[in-house]
Length: 221
Image (cartoon, rainbow, N blue to C red; front, side, top):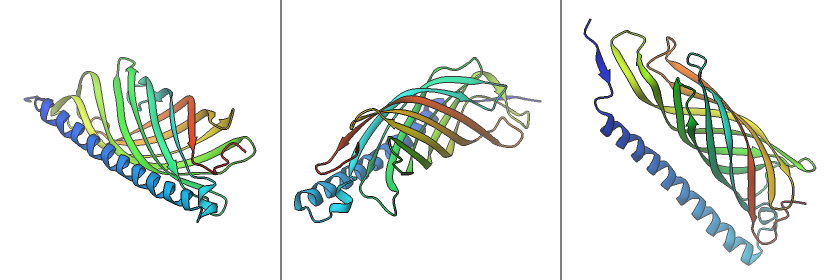
């Protein structure tokens, strides 16, 4: 059977992934900027005290260990992101989150990277903020060796996919601005390699978070 290498269009596919990532980041930045502007006007006017009390922008970063769901593969990666929240609703704080993960060690099987954005809900319990999130974005898998697809017709060295993710985590408040972050995500990739057509990547992150509150916010109290 004649085999073809699914990678001859590497540059065009990489450009497509880069373009999708750029559009997602641009949209997220626009949303964050608009929300920040709206919150700033609200705080200045002091017209919405309830929303003002929990309006903040946070950035975070850390190291991520991932199980790639392919031949017992594992990754060591770095994860960075940010979120914006405006108000409390029924005791919960919703926020918009954007995050990206990039591998620094592919474990000799496959390197998984993605950029995701979505909604996060959190609740403050004493000095801990437990949260859950639901995210969507784009991802890529770079295979360490040429890998045959499930139909036995193509070899892949890279594949691209939409990614759906859901996760939970805890921010342990160390001060009004700093927190220790523990985070876990389950991410679904489309895969041309596996028999099911899916890869479920399980990722755990430990890192730090820095919060920039708006005037009148009482984040650390």
